[in-house]
Length: 459
Ligand code: HEC
Image 1: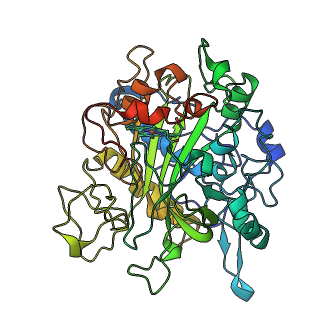
Image 2: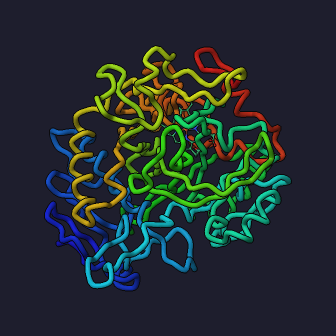
């Protein structure tokens, strides 16, 4: 039986009624049917791989689990926002649209649940003091305050590289310290958001203070297969500045999940309001079955062409120009030419299993509303590890990268790959790099970690 707030059939109606929060609490855990043609629209993230996977192996089910997590985390949050990190059960992913008199009725697609998680910058403070409560919104850096007062909508999120982080991996820096520049010469912006389970664990143990981490065994809470409660969930997102008309490559905002945000440029110290479009999304979850966590990564479908197949004719890519066929591929911007667009190609093609799931879920989003923005996103793959030994060696796939988040670490070798890198360099902190940002520990530790052969060094 499928509970009331779940729709699971390829022929789901265009408009659906979602059970309210109090109903949902008394409902049994969501029942998930992973095999095509089924999919699940549920605002509750999957807590674990519960299917009996049989001869097919785990991967098709893990891919569905990744998509279901994507749906739950990109579900709109309630407006007004009284409690953070929870879904609006009266709404649906992408927002509903019901045609009717006077233009019909629609509901907002965002802010999404994950965007209301706690920002890492508001947990790891300098000096290390207890962070504000989970339900307190993002702090606004001084340089953005006057803009924030004038633009309350944008003020609910600030993508910043606060001055204290100016030499570490925040804002426009990828994991290896490099930036990604879009076709309009604009930097891509990054942010890390952490769910309530993560926040509670860190705050209760005072791990926001590096001295309290010393000598402790760090193990983030996993999901429960008894209560179906999700465990620790972390999100890392990549956003591009939406190119307005008149720019070299204007972006169509109806094809992206967009948000209004304040961005603080670390080099100029200037804060500006921007419309950002989501181009990359890492979702990481700790479950009972996966002590090495589940690592799902999604991208905007028009980010970059496959290196093997080459660009598709008549296709405009967010991070690739056909007119620049001789440009060096997957090469970071240089000091001499800091804002030259990065020519990005996907090194490892998306495999057949993920491609099949992508077609299924993209079609499913359209059944909710024909213009649902989420149909423009795809799962690159989902990596998982079920072992407690060899933390840096995943079960499957062997390597994984997102073209907007690990642009220059796509080669399937060495520590390129989610579990590969997090398991190798953040083994002591249960695969988590945020804990290594805790003060008063020396800043720049991550750069030190990355000064190893085979990894690009920060420019
Ligand atoms: C070469 C190393 C490397 C690889 C490969 C890598 N990461 Fe990371 N990741 C990092 C570093 C370093 C940070 C911390 C910097 C920051 O906050 O952005 C990080 C941060 C994160 C975060 C924020 C939470 C945390 O643990 O700090 C998430 C989520 C994440 N990565 C997911 C992924 C996923 C999913 C993949 C694979 C598709 C991946 N990473 C691949 C190095 C890596």
